[in-house]
Image (cartoon, rainbow over all chains, first blue to last red; front, side, top):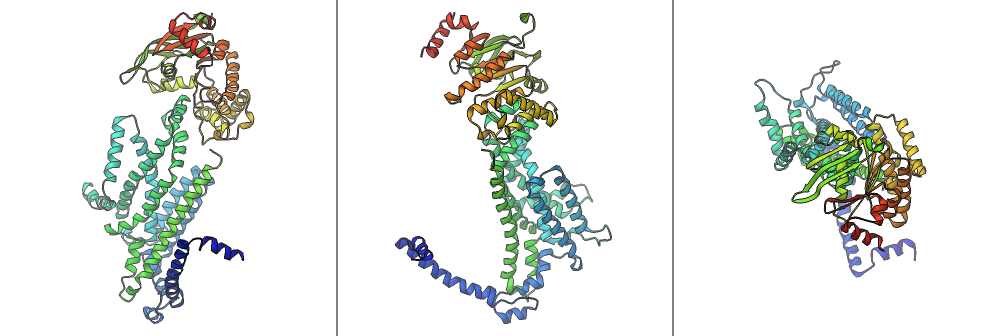
Length: 348
Length: 249
């Protein structure tokens, strides 16, 4: 008997139950795969064209993406200026790729990020270097999703560490503030935090002073994410044996140095999975900013499908948007697994 | 001459409670520069708690503790200053697992004492030489045996050039065949004139090294004596029973 046959016998038809499952699975695949291939590939319409072409082809309407992808990716940003958000997104993704490399975790990386955020802002806002000014109300799509997710994560993470330390602090006032904050924010849905940030927050500002809508959503996301991250970080802190704190104390390191050099490096390493989990959640939750009137990737995709002629092909549109989300989230997930392995090497 | 110097560690009327439990009762102890003190006693007698009070890992509630002329109180700066002058070796080593052996040793000198990394590495290598494991410098603690880890821990405690070394049952967590290598290092350290306060049950080590034996029971210092007197003619009935139990077999 040849190798594939004996493999199939052992793994697919090892017992009556497994034979039955194999047959059922094959039947299911037979039902699902050919129509799917037919729809997505054979009967699909590719390349530029109008909705008529899709109707004639009968399958998936990838023409929609060719025609509408710029609206989906960049929302209502002025059409002739789309190279600016495209460049801004490319800049962010490039920097994310650089940051993924552990050898680049040096002080200059923080500076690089600050610079990138400034360039991002300059590109998106314009008004400098001869770029036409663009209001944030016209921002949308992927750049908006990215800037909210990345900045919310970048600010929430250090903030959450302070909250977690505060929750374990020996000073009752600091502990009470941290606990109060975490419990309050965790006790309400993100939607209401975003509403608070965008509707209630301006009420407390002096007359005539306004804060940008994107910034308000960003603040809301950051505050929300920080509370959840803080609990993940606290889990890590609790897992560190008391002896580590004592050894650091006995060397006279003092509180901040012992946290920074001894406790946090170990604690954060332990909680990479829940932390990345929260990052992924945060990235996807950016789609909720639509409720305060911002056009993130999902909302922009939805708007791009609003044209009655294209509306029958919303599945293709949403599939494409989902794929973009998936790429980012899957990357984060794989990266965290790699990072865990990489950090585990050598020690223990 | 030694007796005229002020003691380097002085405890006077020290009391400590855990809730209602009175762990330390009116402890008085003086340790002179260069003196080797071995503290023994049954478990729960407060001996570990006492030496942990000396570098403020535990807080005492009344009485006074003076280390190298500085009184321990709530002043954080004073506490950190004292901790830099007092090295401590723990029962469970407590090396930093995410740092290499060398980094474990150089961390405090660089961050606390402001040494340059090169200077700190030189000092650290010299100390690893002294505890006889210079070839392990690049490894992580998890790759070493218990005895090696404890020797690294001793070297780490010596890195800040402490004036007093505290040992909190340094051999209790070790496999029996590794106890000897750690005691050898401690004996060598004693012969170099380091002031040492050791909580240990290694009575042969105590007899050979100690200048003073301290016996504690139920939170009190029961007996303080020279080792010869302490082991051969213990004055207190409780001491006699304790020694009978641990040396008898």
